[in-house]
Amino acid sequence: MVEALRTADADAGGGWLTNLDSLAVVDQISFRDLNPIAQGLADALGASPTHIEQTPIASGDSPILLLNQAANRIGAGEIKIAAIVGGEALKTAAQRAAEKLGTAASAQNASRAASTRKTPNFRQRYGLTAPVDVYPLYENASRAAFRQTLAEGQHESARMWAQLSEMAAKNEGAWIRTSQSIDSIEVPTASNRPIAFPYTKLMVANSSVNQGAGFIVASLAEARRYGIADDRLVYVGNGAAAHECEDPIGRDRYDRSASMEVSIRRTLELNNVEVDGIDLVELYSCFPCVPKMARRILGWPVDRPATVFGGLTFGGGPIGNYMSHAVVSMVQRLREDQRLGLLFANGGFATHNHSIILSREPIKAAIFPRSFDFQADADARRGKPPPVVETYSGPATIESYTVLYERDGSVKHGIIVARTANGSRTLAKVPAEDSQTINFLTSGEVEPIGSLGNVLLSKDEIQIWQSDQF
Image (tube, rainbow, N blue to C red; front, side, top):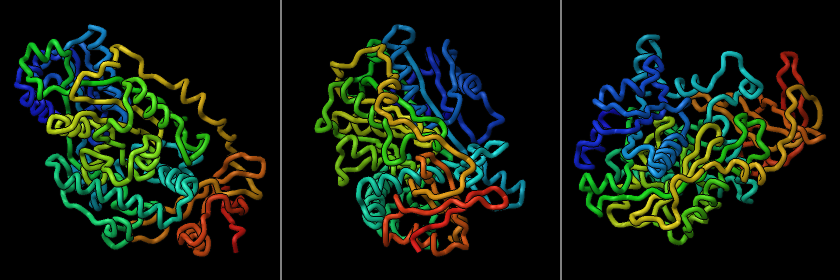
């Protein structure tokens, strides 16, 4: 993080860090014993900002939230210069943990541990623990809603991800700088093992990285005073944020997100921007379902890249700080030859959404300070969530599902999100040995969403899915 901000300072001609009014840090999970880290970072930079903060959790929307807050504080005259930064060293943390325990290094274990409570809740008892377990619920439900076959949905994901890899290959800040073909992403292999259906390794966020990124935001008057040339200036527009229910099992549905829609559409409205006027986008890409839903809301063609940095698989997925890398890349691209860019961030379990505009020219419609909280709008657009029942036996319908895999590619178990006969929501497990149902869920021969079955309560009080299809 120190190195990132020193690089930003040098890019802006130097002398900024010792004059910071505000330092905002994205929470990190790699070395929890270092938290709170913000004051130590200020000391390392030789900075004495009057405002120091660190986000309470490492959420993917954090950098855009902090950018929007900084712009509002500058607009209100509270501060003149702000720095925003984050970083993760999960690759190193995993290696050190492995050396201590004598096991194989795994950054996924660290990120999964950060999502696990001491006492597992209802969804965690069925295996819905980390983001990689939950996002497939959106992928499978939205694919069915888009009326795509499994093959069509997978091809769209692989096509988008191949574009991400091409962008990462050209970006010196990316973690993996090797472009991948559509087939290499889409087809499961020993090196591209299945993770959580329908995602392969090359479709999911790569948290095994050591990456930091930061940027400086200032008033135009201060930028002028420092002598920043016009061709180096990038202007901040207004942003919009909204969120879903924290518990993904308490959502109204899995084929769309009202808060995502509100965040993107309100951002366009606030800045008086049309989709045709946008040159570049960063559509958060932890898992394919997110940019696939976002591009449909935006009307962004599938043949245009959804990233300026390279995506969380190839650019790298430093937990809550990915969008800081996207901000840096967006600024660099706008300075080169483009005019207008949209940044869309997503955090949690498809929970938190925050979008903002960056531009090479001042945005006439932008006003600072301006509230970015559009939660009431999202709540008004959202349907009523179904009640959740944790103990159920009887007929049910598949609302969404996934299948989790072991590291060797073998099936761990399947997870069904089901609607009961009276419309309530519950969960059921598909044991690995039930190969017939696992094949039904993953073969693509028919669409499992909407199919009928029964939930049976086992002796250990885990609900088991029994399909009616055979």
